Image (cartoon, rainbow, N blue to C red; front, side, top):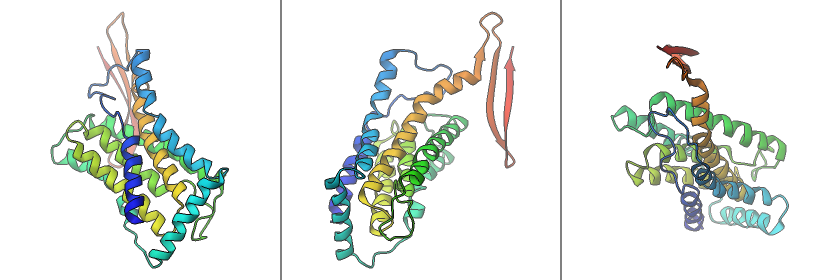
Length: 257
């Protein structure tokens, strides 16, 4: 059963990760302005949205909910004493890999400040969508701990990070994408085997995580352009950007004459 669940999540993951290239370039001075380009990026949101829809359907479609009960029952029979906290570390591994690779000299697609802003935007989208959903759906966890089961937060963060790693480093090597999504899949499987979440919770969590990062990479160029302005008459360039120095966040304003 472990192999079946793991394989299923791998299929879901790499389908959700489809078409990840040329989202943003390092200079990031212009945003895509063609309907065709924008349409191609919006299409990549379909699969993670479908994962969320699958999870949500478990509230109203009984056969899908029965899959949750079946898989949970099988885990109870085969691995009743399974217990690990590894997923608490695995969920952050893809994000750590992005900054670790950059630290050792392997450059990603974007500069540090843009990459960090993208990660922050992804986390903000996930926080507003995924965690708000937890409190509105009010689903009981398999272990009965609380009513914050849907969607899986650990899985959401792991898949958000995996897509973040893929966006930044898939052009360097597909190995980075495989590693990131392997950590994400393992996180989701462990959440089920620790009886913290149902199958539909982790599927939806994967969708929320991937969708948050894809959406961030889609809209960030427009946000960046709104903060970066060039006066066509004078040629002056102005920029308003977030900063972080000595542990203090802030905003910086610059003008190039």
